Length: 395
Image 1: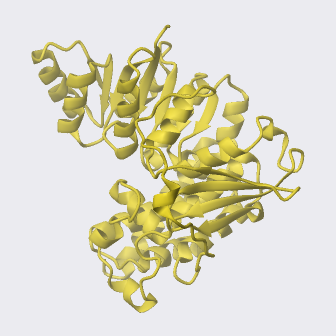
Image 2 (image 1 turned 60 degrees about the horizontal axis):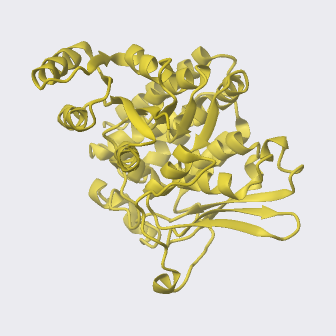
């Protein structure tokens, strides 16, 4: 069997490390071509020493030079690249078969698009690529030979529950609704009056999943579910009103598809990202992911409830951005990135994340996103407006 060459964008994050774990379990099927990281140079160097990829990519030239020297001293032939150019090169390289797009935030947009345009099998864990530029991204996908497979546990579950010809349209394949499940995060039952006082440490303490700090805060605010709603619309050709969010605290059912005949198909599994990663890597086959079997008898019960938009205003803002379309989702995402970073730096309260996003969306009207530059300009304008909010409030 010829081994597939895999590039992992965002290799030192939780998704990247889970991908490397699955890849290492199947060394007969996969070979690591490239790994990338933004700031975790010690961790990236360790990954290079372990997996010996052909390329590594870092943020800037100084980092690249220092890492290149250390890898050469260790006897590795790994070439170190840097910046957007390096990311795009390893995403679109002719020798690469599979690209795991796991860079968090807007920074992952260009290399993910490069992988699509180069016709790769793209394992999409970067929500922002579709949230920011859904129409452009899907157009690029249609014009290429790329295969797009979702990695978010929810979207991967939906993909598994839909018929293979779902691209014909939801109505044509008999789908009534997509039921997007959400754990509710660490503040699902926190008294509303206490939310303004919660700390970054509390927000990052997810009850079920192990994730990076930014994504953990998004889960706590349910912005992650709002971004996933927007992403689901693009991935599966759904309208925002056809995607219903259901709070499911156990995180065992990862999402469901409701059909017009009354059937509801669900994908279940332990909350471990290696399951969707292994599914997408091997699709349409199945391989061992290293995840233990689901024990429903131990779990005992599965609970469901409607999301409280007073508690989670970010979910409402995301749905509104999805309905407006154009550059609104890109502005929503950019404002959220600025607000979450300010919260993690203790400059704002948790409840002010939604305040910043709402202010940006009210002050800047959405426009048509005719090209990638339109999207990037909207992103930068939203970041500027979010920064102005921080300035006005002395933060």
